Image 1 (tube, rainbow, N blue to C red):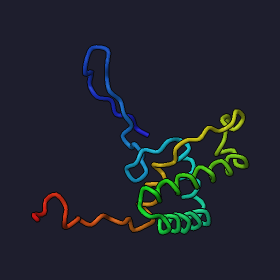
Image 2: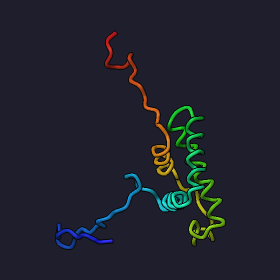
Image 3: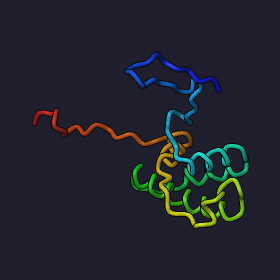
Image 4: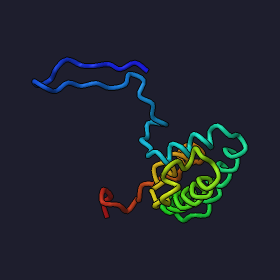
Length: 131
């Protein structure tokens, strides 16, 4: 990857960043979320399973935030399960035990990618309406 460096902004400071900064869908994922997303993306059977699971969890939820919470919980459970058997999921963290890490960004991304997110309709009796 190419690194682009800007001119000195202040004495002693100067800015460098990756030209091809990679983000998934414009969302910043933590390392566990990124590992899980890469794994699911590279295994078609896992991707199909998760597409169906995300759609079902969101459909059974009363609203989008509840769906995000349910998907987040399931993603973490799955990450723990996979980290016990796949080296790419665990590394050194597996030896000292995993601490619960949020999968909320990944849950929101998968819901946005794989479902029709319900949008709220404007309330006709809202603050802008005249009574």
